[in-house]
Length: 112
Length: 111
Image (cartoon, helix red, strand yellow):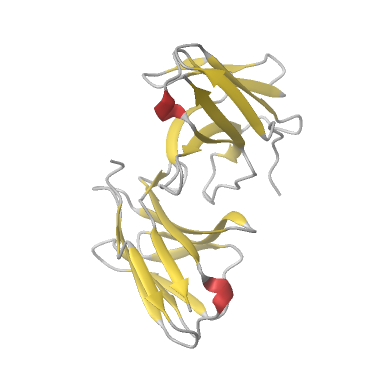
């Protein structure tokens, strides 16, 4: 158990819908990262937050957005969902950006 | 793109040491070598990391060559539960912390 929690574990929705994935970092960690893992693309970095501020962006689509709240939990919002958004979404956290990242168990999103 | 090269797959007998190689010939002086593994579709699990010196923890040992162009992850006594995809990642310990995952090595531990 890494100490990072993600909810929900599974999410099934329809195209065009909007969903929110939630991540609670390990106690004391200030930095949160979101990654997407699809069958054809592998694990890809989406976005990073540090102490509430966006720190880095990867290949995150404009339909996706995220934020980190004052209590340090983070949410990833996915809108206008397409079939290709079906994937595993992982959250990771670290004490500060330079430190080791610990991953949560992931949320499996299925878009029908 | 990932800055590492790993064999796509390896087999290991249960109870034997598993030695997983990684080439990172373009590594720079301030970049660390990290190893993670992913069992089935679980979240990647941190194993070990190092800069120059060899490292050991309760899970594994990391051997980094003197020129730092390659490394080997050693699982001393592999078990069936070590069957996973192992990722070698070169990571700059700076303020932008995202990891770049390659395809990794699929390790199959066989009875």
